[in-house]
Length: 349
Image (cartoon, rainbow, N blue to C red; front, side, top):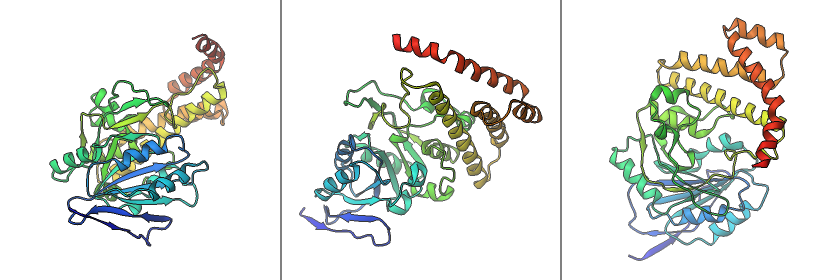
């Protein structure tokens, strides 16, 4: 069948610009959104865009949203999207100011139209059949799936592949209580979620959260978390915030700040999960989650060094956690004392 060229304008979506779309004139079916989120990824964005354009599913809306990159990422996006004449609708957005990961994620549903949203990062590569596989599973559930996730194939910055990596909740065979407390669930770069699930819970309120730790639990607690046992994404494991720190060059203070960052993320995620449970009227895991968050708060106070020894000690005793205070205090002192030794051993290899 002949194709027709059309341009979609989105005047109600501030900061967006649509580019021409070529599609079958009788196209129908479930509209999916492939949402590619970017920030300072000029080294990898071409491959990420090529993966988006190569998706075999139709009808598909591709939204490329840049969080005010300071490098050449957006220039490449404009260049490649402007030259695209394939079968998919492409929408380009650039935030006028940097919103951060969660602020950017919270804009997904306002920038997109699809019933099902396939999330992608600007340094990863989605395989061409990713969207088709996800939509197939979604329809098989009667459109009741909240999220659909899969394993990934890790690649380094040069594109060299490793063995497939399973999501933590699959590898560890977690039950719902395990998920409520876990700091690792699904692999966000290989996740898709339904618009209705996002609208049920609303935006993620705490900017310290990691989105997959929130969306994964939301989906699990509503009984709609689906898993495809087939890698659908080439996952860049040595870039971004989740890449491993290099102990050989990282100072002790940098390692402490990294630890504090992970503690802040975990506390924020627990708080968000508690809010989400309350929103849907479930209270079964909340006492355990609140207790866990309190324990993490004590550890954070000790690690931060922002409070006096006696102030934290009194706080810990009042909360019934003197043992945790003592263990945390000893651990952070040992960490600082032994860090140069560990660093030298790491350099020797």
